[in-house]
Amino acid sequence: MTLSQTDLQTITGGFLAALRANALYVAPSATFSATSAAASPLSMADAVALQREFVELRSTIDKVAGYKSAANAAALQTALGLSEPIVGALFAGGERASGARIDRAAYRTLLIETELGFVLGKAIQTRLTSVDELREAVTSCVPMIELADPGFGRTRFNGLDLIAANSASAGFIRGTPQQAAQVEVNDISIRLSHGTTTLHEAQSRDLMGDQWQALLWLVNKVIDTGYQIHPGQLFMTGALGGAHPAAPGEYLAQFGPLGEVSFSVF
Image 1 (cartoon, one colour):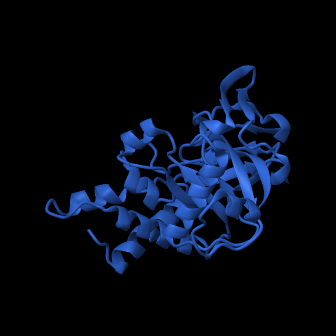
Image 2 (cartoon, helix red, strand yellow; image 1 turned 135 degrees about the vertical axis):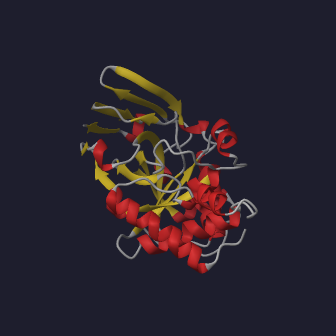
């Protein structure tokens, strides 16, 4: 299926209206299956076009702060019908400070993830060919909490729907940055605790075996998707340790030499 401009605007306009109302997204795949049994299924090209249209529409009211990788785990990709991770845009309005109190009612289905973030110091317009080239563009490494929300609630959705709705991008908490050149980004131990319970422990190299390779993949995928990369934008390479449904209480994420990020949920 190749969506018309009218289809793109109708679906993404519905996404934005739902986002503003904190209501559930309608899965595009379900919409087209219901309208015509003979219609071709939603394609990857359709999903990417929908995401770009949605991001462009949302950027009229909020600034793009960077980009993220999602669905990095092979089991999750299989469940969603995907063959690789996906990307989404981060928005400045979703940022919360360390120590923030997070209201679950402000999200449809709030998930908590620990990740590493990287800030780029220059614009990138074409694919990068090496990690060495990438390192020259990175200024800092940051401990991160992603506040993820697919937006569909309990409604059935697939990987293409997730891409279209901007890959569960809802918000993030940024810790204290450190110069990337002074951090061994593949040797960081991460622990996420909820009260006295340890939710997970992970190693930074768990993602693709190498954070630099994960970041290189993400930057190039963002370029391939048609987005522009500007100086100062944040790149989150993907979940380390899995995603956890948000529950009321105090959270503490420890990132070894990168420090801690704390927050609470109510």
